[in-house]
Image (cartoon, rainbow, N blue to C red; front, side, top):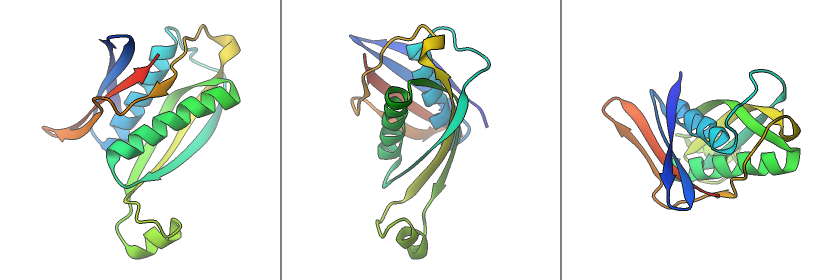
Length: 151
């Protein structure tokens, strides 16, 4: 499952536009776009993989929460999350919702990323993900996402 992304200029911010064959692929592509927005040359090796798990009621909220978590991990761990791998599942039954803490969340994300030490890259700061103009939708047999980041 692979997705593609492109950086788009957006006034004083930066946007990532991505496509993928599945929600998992498009989420991973947006996360890779976030890394690209922060660093022109990502090292092909180095860094430890770490995990991220999130749940949300809808795909927009899930993407927002996931990308915000990657920015948090960057700040706390001092790493640039790259080579993102994402698996998204839907929580369809009541037992699964109760196992998730009783919430009525509908989507679960399990992801990993390779954390490249920020000391090893020339990184620009992306401050936050925004809901401004965010799109996550299926279009003609592929998934599409557009996300604006505050820089």
